Length: 443
Ligand SMILES: O=P(O)(O)OC[C@H]1O[C@H](O)[C@H](O)[C@@H](O)[C@@H]1O
View (cartoon, rainbow, N blue to C red):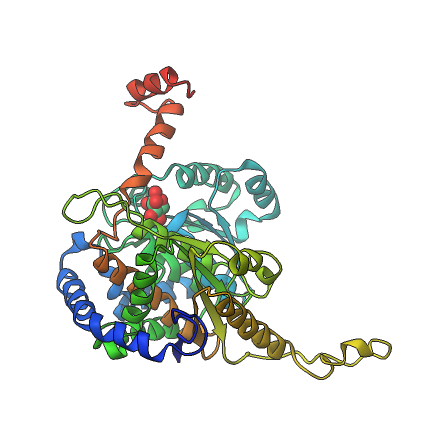
């Protein structure tokens, strides 16, 4: 079960917000249900990039991924070469649910030292390289692939040590995979990178990490069911409305703070999903609006000893979203120790009891400081509930895009930096831009 505790979002931020919230939801119900209908209508257009909604139903691709994994029993290390949406989803779910024995590694940057250290630690004969790029051209991923492709010369049959995940037709990787006889999986054209975790972008690495993919998709189907229902039962529409109401009040920061070390990469995935989807210069009519709220990463309990100082005493410019587990998969009792009787409030208690108390205490302490916050409650951390949470957050993002009348599924703002990179690297066709940069003192 995934449920939400909205007790701390009342204007006074203390105590249940029974009246104000219910009246907000009632007054927005029609608009939210119209947004739902608009999303479901647009879904049939591949250019709307709403294919992520149907990924949880695609059991055939899951079977292909599963078959491929079972045919590679020799893999000890899987290296994902990918960045942004091509890495963050698998990294978040792998950290939360991966149970080995295959070790997952992510090369999602071009700082040389960590990549050299990784290369020196790997045995080419036992390593599978999964190069993932929707565009099939991203500089960081392509640079990493050139290095690993050369490194794999040491392997008996290098083609067996590479699997490609890319667009069915676009980009440099697809023809290369065909020419070299490499196994390749598709990123559906209708699925954008930051929404692709339940496509082979995420499921292939996660199959090697031992994640229960069937239940990951089953949980995502539960989120789809909720997102298709009327406002009173539509959890993603409701949390989107909370974000919308507080953004309207000028709270332009959203903190995602899971009380779980295993969920430590969830905020990284959410930052890309939220910021890249909702930070937009123009609305759907081409009017300049410059929308967006800024997602901030935090982890409980760790950030109680850091950022919570700002959350309690800093500006009232943020909405804090906690993620809390209701049941541990196992627990750890805290023993009594002679001579440390000053800690007897801990004797015989458990880590999970302390984690839960700290989460509840922090949420209430923020509410007392009139810092609005709500908690997403997962019955437990397993594939079903994490799949449900991921799809819930994707739907929440889609609903916010509708409420703000923007295209949440493109990312025009990242293109100029890439073109400047090509110019600075001397790529053919970017000579004029390189000259402009030199004239502006960048070179
Ligand atoms: O998967 P790729 O095409 O390599 O793109 C990787 C990432 O970089 C792009 O520039 C976009 O900002 C992201 O939305 C995307 O996830």
